[in-house]
Each structure stands twice: as structure tokens, then as C-alpha cells.
Length: 239
Image (tube, rainbow, N blue to C red):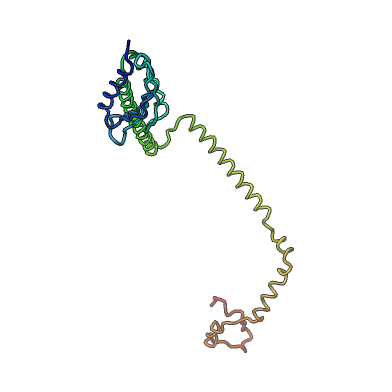
């Protein structure tokens, strides 16, 4: 007959010696304890779970109870994977003490999760680098023109030019309608018929004569008593 109590006690002593810093007894009846499992990665990337195990009466012929009591830097999906792994390992090791085997399997799983996290980070980094390179290339090369994009641009350009032409024509027509003829200006401003008279009045009706134009008349040998004298002949060039 199997002495389950003896096997459980011996395993518990062995587990305590293997994991002295991460093993904690919670209760003795039933026997319950926790083991904290940490990945092998560096501090910045390490993940950790605390597993709680409870012996059932017929352990190891029956699997122990377990649960994830605490997790750090690990997603819920990873937690579900760990629980599924514990079920699988327990089924494969029935009849043998298995706590060390279960904990070792979980630690290997944590290392796999760390590798996956690193791979995702590297892939994300490469993706961002590719996007940055493509953006820089597009900025340097400009937009690639295809037949479809050119025809679309040409159609839009022609529509814009027609619209500008229509607006300009409309503005010119409107300007022509607003331009007044001389008759219309005269009819609108009744002051125009007296503007010239007002100009003369403002000038004082005075006309200045430049007397220097006539300063050489005294030098001419003129005989005003001469019956043939005609002042109008002064400007003639005839001898």
C-alpha cells in the first residue's frame, strides 16, 4: 500500500532545498505551498509567476491542485498557456512525484514567452524602420505618376481652368455694365455744365502777356505814317 503522506513529505523537503528563496509553505493540512518561477532573461525582460500547489489525499496517483497566484509582465493568454501546460504534464507524470517537473516545464515556458516577446519587439522595430525608410523615399522621389493619376489630374486641371475663365468673364461683363458713358456722367453730375465757368472765375479772368516777346519792336525801322504800312506784315518772311 502506497504511503502518500510519506511521499508528499519527502518531496516537500526536496522542493524546499531546490527552491530555498522562492518556496513558501502556506498550510500543513492540507499541505499547500507556493513556488515563484522566474524566466532566465535579464532584469529588464524577465517575467515571473507564483504557482500555488495543494496536495490531494492520493497524490501522486492523483494530480495536485494548482493555480497561478501572481504574474508579472505576462499577458492573460500566456497564463492560460501555462495552466494548459500544467494539466498536460500532470497527466503524463501520474504515479510519480511531479512538482519539480511541473515547475521546470513552467520555467521553460516562461523562457519561450520571453523569446516571443523579444521577437515581437524586433519585428516591430524593423517594421518602424521600414516605414521610416519608405516615408523618406517617398519624400525624396515625390509621387509616382501613373496614367490613371495623370488623367485624373488633367481632368481636374481643365475643370479648374474653365471655372477661372467663367469667373473672369463674369467679372468683365459686370465691369462693363457698371462703366458710365460721358452722357451718363453729365446727366448724373449737373455741376459739369458750369465747371468751365467756375474754373475761369477761380482764375480771376486774368490773362498774363509776356512783354518780352515784343522787346525788339523798337529796333525795327517802321514808318507808321507810311500809307503802305501794315502791322500784319511784321510776321512775314518776304523781303
